Image 1: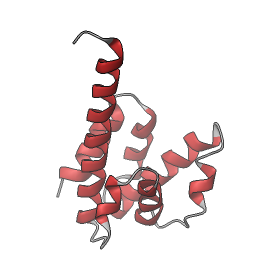
Image 2: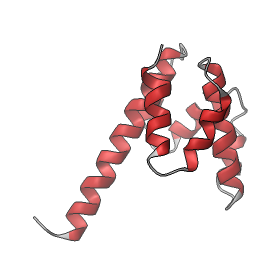
Image 3: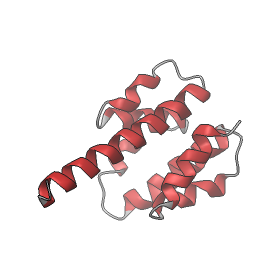
Length: 110
């Protein structure tokens, strides 16, 4: 049970489940009719673009190295604004552990 591959796989699955659950909750709070898309790999990026009020073409920018960092910040800033929160919360998307705090705040706050 101490196999590094098993530990990595387990932690990756846990991270994906937490991310999907929080994105699902955020989509529900914004009244998105297809919040279940948060659970589908890659399609959840389309959901993020939709929640941020951006075209699905922004997903193509997520494939460009270094540009994707700026795009993910902009998407989360727009999602934060859509939730009625300060857009600066989106900057935490690139900070380890800060991204979890940011998503928890956006998903669980009123």
